[in-house]
Amino acid sequence: MTPADQQPIRVAILDLYDGIPNQGMRCFQDILDRYREINKLNLTYEVFDVRKDEQVPDASFDIYISSGGPGSPLDSEGSVWETKYWELIDALDAHNHSNNGPKKHVFFVCHSFQLMCRRLQLGNVSLRRSPSFGVLPVHQVEQGAEEQIFEGLNDPFYAVDSRSWQVVHPNEEQFTATGAKLLAIEKERPYIDLPRAIMAVRFNDYFVGTQFHPEADPVGMKAYLITDEKKEQVIHEHGEAKYTEMIERLEDPDKILLTQITMIPNFLDQAILNLQEA
Image (cartoon, rainbow, N blue to C red; front, side, top):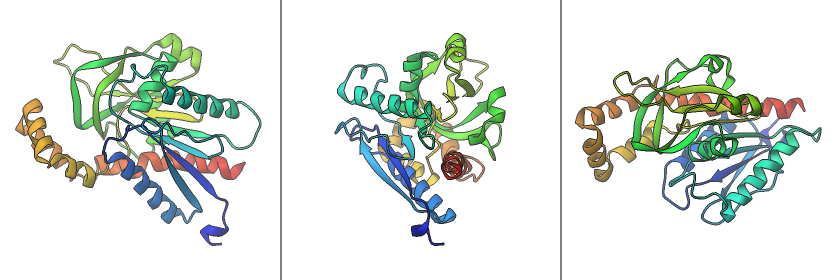
């Protein structure tokens, strides 16, 4: 059977970058292209510019990936684009609570993750004292050990972290009330008396998200880091030794490359198996 003869799988990529040039959108598409080729699937995807053009898909897609993006995850509350965005998420959630066909799986990344945590009141969404940027370790917590999207990763595993905002101080009552599960937290910093950020949450059986960028690949990250502007910024903020460490970690196959070829494909495995079983 050729891919064209197989069940069609439609993926919507929700672009929250607000028109800002980035590597993330390319990386999502590269992952989907590679996954389609490896698994010989009839898989297509469509990109929607949610913030800049207020484009939001309907609920007919099978799988949704919602990207990171710039700016405050607080200031957009009540905006036209965010209102449309929540209408979609609510429609997908309502579908998942019905008996109307296969469940809709959604992966929320960075800015999208912060929006979800804000809306569900799972923690305190706040501006960091200084931006976090680099290839950094992420630590699984107890419930993360059973999480399918982490299958095949080390503990800690490494991921690209790029954020000025964070979600801290998990609200245990809200986690219990919503059924969400805390999966991973920020690296331990024994000499800094600051809370460790929430790095991954399973919001429900079909919605999952990460504060870091599991889509990032070494090629895109290196192209970004070696620009004069970014190199100067990283060295100014973190020192030359930290910059050199970032470059070296990009070349380690057990770090962000492993995360990139593992985590979103694991999510797709779960979503597509559910689709095929239905």
